[in-house]
Image 1 (cartoon, rainbow, N blue to C red):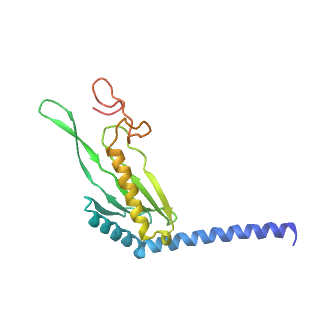
Image 2 (image 1 turned 135 degrees about the horizontal axis):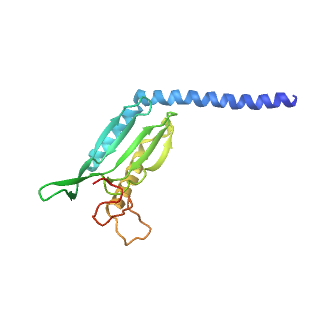
Image 3 (image 1 turned 90 degrees about the horizontal axis):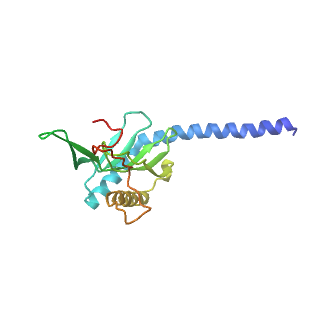
Length: 186
């Protein structure tokens, strides 16, 4: 075999690998549609029920092949508000966080934690990636570990204080003299 044939052989292996990855993307997307998303929903709902967690399992399907299943802790008044005048106040809304199972562009599933945040009060913390799975790798015991990680991260966020110097809250605050965060509309 001459040098050119060796290089063509090496190139052909790369082309074959590329074609296999493209086929896997189609296969993974079909698995999501043919039951994986429903399996994720059912497992999360069972965990919510079993733990009496006040949460909702939601499916997001605005973009085909980028769908997601979320375990959402919902939204609520934060207990903080801005006094607009003597009679009017503007409540700050708190998003309590979510555990997300979302399809990626290649059909694999990314598992993320969206941290809580309070609207108009600092910058939300970026999501934490737990892992990325091929559909066949996403086994039932993993969901409990994901939920444990999620609950620990959310609890740490909620229980923030300065006793632990390396523990950071989900946002940075910069208040100006009138009490509003700098850069926020009044």
